[in-house]
Length: 429
Image 1 (cartoon, rainbow, N blue to C red):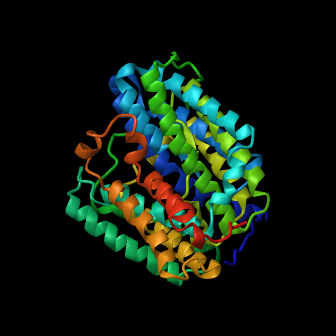
Image 2 (image 1 turned 120 degrees about the horizontal axis):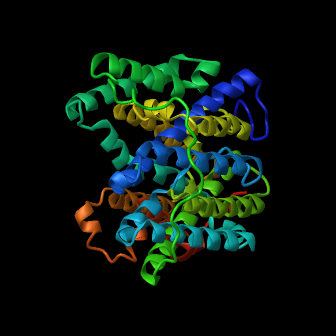
Image 3 (image 1 turned 45 degrees about the horizontal axis):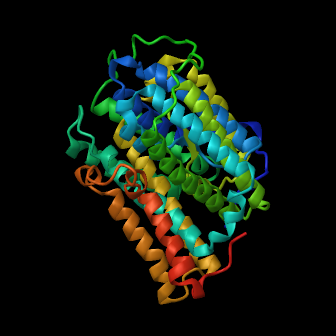
């Protein structure tokens, strides 16, 4: 795959700013969505905007360290959804227990990465495993995208769905017509144009952000920290196991796509930074970070693989952390607009996976197709698992068994290295 800017290329300042804005546009929605969910769980005890300010600080610091010292890859960092499951399962034990669990889990992850454990696991990621990881992200995000495009307040769900479909078609039309920098930064323009059109026809911002301060310090680590009981700690450690698989798969998938060298060191430093980032999150009292696997979709859609494009994005997150008004405005981007942009990015990610299948010849037989197909089916089914079914599972298994991405990754590893071991391909470097 040809890229306009390679991994270590430094674009000009104008292009760098635009690319950074696009990465910023991709990074912000998960922070807003997951951050609001966690803050909402704590009711009146936590101000959602204040919580988001602290979360923006943590994500900005971890993203900058990852790009400049950690894995040194163009990878989005965001709040880990798998930790949300751990927070829900231990919520009744209090925030001090949750924060303590985050610190312990993050520290253990950093220690294991520091001794080089995760670097040795690179051999598990054959071409078929990488292809499945790339496609799993798109498929397991389908429920989230569906919820976004069918949001029912205050606009009826049917109107939001129609708007999202039409706007998605408009994005792909623009992708086919635009060239150069305009095509590379299509996501940011889509967010701006989509929000403007949506608010023009369907709703107004009103006074929802009028009371917010333009500038305010986000606060500093002052969260309650307590020693978790064994049950809570075990639940979080299982979550961190799933998080490590997610983190490892994300780093390996982007490294493979870009044919980056020194992957063992990149994995070691990347997972170590994620662990330290979770320790930092525990001290701030916010949900911990993880490397997101949606980055290949952005890279494929823009043709820009430069890691330096994420430096302005990290700076933007830090600047936004000091403005409650800006965070309030950004969190007001309509859900259908975010959903349409995610459809565009995830479609590009599937296209990147299919290109990898052809380039690496990862699917040359019927058995190869089964190795790819079954994990995708399992991951998608688990992603759409009804909440009432998920709550019936043992609490210890829930963080893994209800995460479609983790189930799919475990399935492809078992099929590739145990069931069809004789057909396993070479590790992609």
